[in-house]
Length: 251
Image 1 (cartoon, helix red, strand yellow):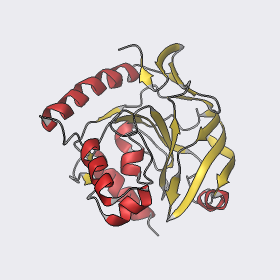
Image 2 (image 1 turned 45 degrees about the horizontal axis):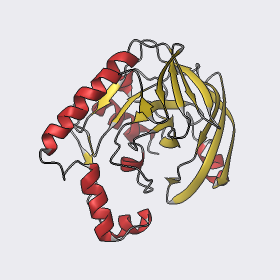
Image 3 (image 1 turned 180 degrees about the vertical axis):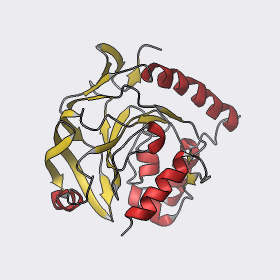
Image 4 (image 1 turned 120 degrees about the horizontal axis):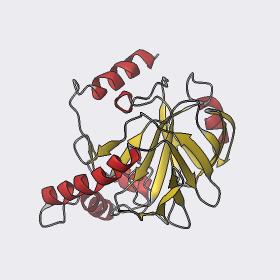
């Protein structure tokens, strides 16, 4: 029922005819979901947005510049591998566009993201951060992928949720690959606006691709899944190690 609205939204955000910026006002409900007091959550949100800096705007301009170096590098890439203790997955991004999420459309921001070539994704991906779908918690997800198609899945909690999601057309393929770069965010809050930005994490989204990246996958869902890379995680680009233990090492 939402597929038409979904496609309109993704098309208009891609061509910027829809101007929007997503942000989060600290509420008691969000604090409770994150396991914090309201005061703790307020501090978390403000810090994630660089509001405690002497010059918040200047800090975001620094983010833009540093992330642009990553984007410029990845926009020359073909084969990328995410690798950690329980993840070993490769995908191609040749001629796909990496984007710099620097605070203009999300606040807080801090990620670089693209869309994989649809049939190029192969391997196994483990996502250890808790994720939420329609109010239901899903923990420790493992996805097995062959030629772009998710052929098997499991979760320590909420596998039945994934069972239902995979019935949605297009949800068995990936629409996004990304790297979180906001090191002011160091814990999961069950709010994707923050969690996908965690510094030292990667995420992949099943379902709808962002058209501005050149992605072709279409679906009524775009569901991000996040993995911690700070303990031995690596990103290898065309055979070159560019990221290790949650940090870029070639810039």
